[in-house]
Image (cartoon, rainbow, N blue to C red; front, side):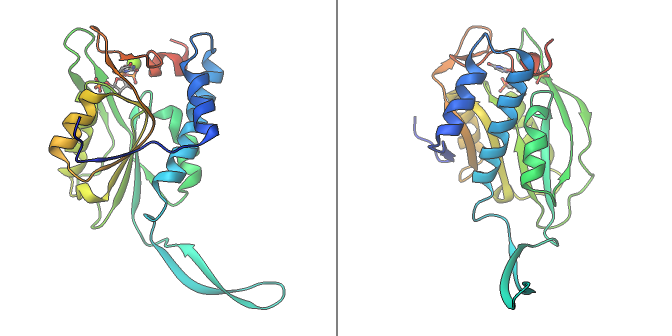
Length: 216
Ligand SMILES: O=P(O)(O)OC[C@H]1O[C@H](OP(=O)(O)OP(=O)(O)O)[C@H](O)[C@@H]1O
Ligand SMILES: O=c1cc[nH]c(=O)[nH]1
Ligand SMILES: [Mg+2]
């Protein structure tokens, strides 16, 4: 597969560990959710490297004055969790980017057509100029949900260059769609899996991320 987008799979023992916990069918919901949370933290950490604008200033330490760098609090940043499964990544992602506003987007796939439908949209009518967006979408399967999310966000004034996607398991059909429509887009994922089964589930995958996070 030739990809024009940039898919990063950070090589890290903690990412491998928590992905394996999440994949295991015997992992109970509470532990599954904390595995997703951990993955949300480390992947968000990787995704914002060299991306969050900073300001240089001075601070007074207990001993002397010293150069200091802070995340620029003036830069508008949004986190868009795709409900439900994206909620499992949200707490830790928000801790990593405490200046971010959270805009919930509720999408659900029809089980037979696999087409997504939107049931909750808390995006603003218009994002402030230069807003940076991190989308939390743990499962990139057919790509229908992430494409809908990208369209909703971009139509409200966000430049595709200022969007980064955090996923846990990414499959080729979704990556192909993103690549075709958004060359240069950056995705941070714990793994790229082989493909989809006849019901649109990622194989080997981890099952239904929403159901497993919430025990439904
Ligand atoms: O790439 P796609 O084929 O669109 O599949 C990915 C979507 O499927 C799941 O959502 P689901 O509809 O199961 O809702 P849930 O998160 O509430 O379980 C998952 O959380 C993604 O949002
Ligand atoms: O494998 C999959 C595919 C879509 N959504 C999920 O939660 N899991
Ligand atoms: Mg689901």
